[in-house]
Length: 331
Image 1 (cartoon, rainbow, N blue to C red):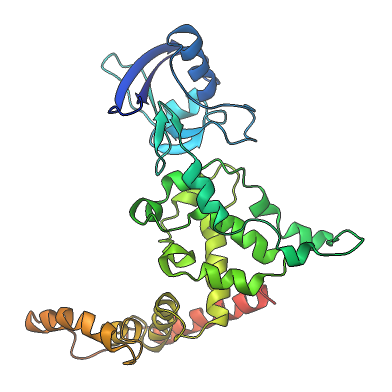
Image 2 (image 1 turned 90 degrees about the horizontal axis):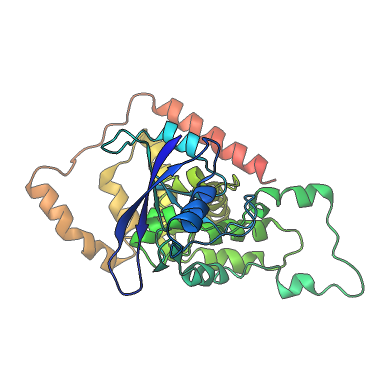
């Protein structure tokens, strides 16, 4: 089949540009095989990373048709079926670009150092205390080891990092890859630093609370690690041991749930005061939202009363069932 590759190329200190390459390939040819063909037969200056060619090493991660993926895993046939872009001659088009949220070195090669630096922030290895077991191995039961399988499947390809909306607007956010590894360590029976780890992951929007739950990391992960789900488990662990007075992110979650349980939806009159104003304890917080409150009152947008929603009892029952199920799951 005929296909046109449109590759976003870039040289150091220069602006990116789109270059087109026409190929004759089999529908089952992978994106990586097509890039190899371009490099070997049309333009030897094209730069990209590759290694295992078997979805193991994660080296060939890039953006294919607007989403981050492994070039050795995706093939031309599926890409042209899922994304029906064609050029002026009616030939299917596959667009390839470097990963997002990382500096471009050249063409499809990005500088992964920020990715590794963020991973290092969660100390992604069993604690020193856990490793100090004299004269014997630190054994785990099959059940204990099985709990680590999903997070252990991460190949650090960077796809989730590339798509992370939170990272794109908040450089301090540690990233979904790091938090997925962090959850693995919280689950690991050999690690002895769970309390300290949870405290560090509670670092406002730099830690677990920085995740905006956009789901893109789950969507693009080639190994089904589900980083967003792992981040959710960290948040649940924090909520279980923290009170509403510990931090604003914790307060935000707890107040949200409490208000919905009470009235079926959020009572906006109380939400800002309880979360930002810390139940009237944080005078600076109250002062920060006071101008907004006055503007809302003057424009008639501040609710003077609150009517519980229809079905409040049913909503409350559902929340309590979920909370009970979470307790049993963590038992």
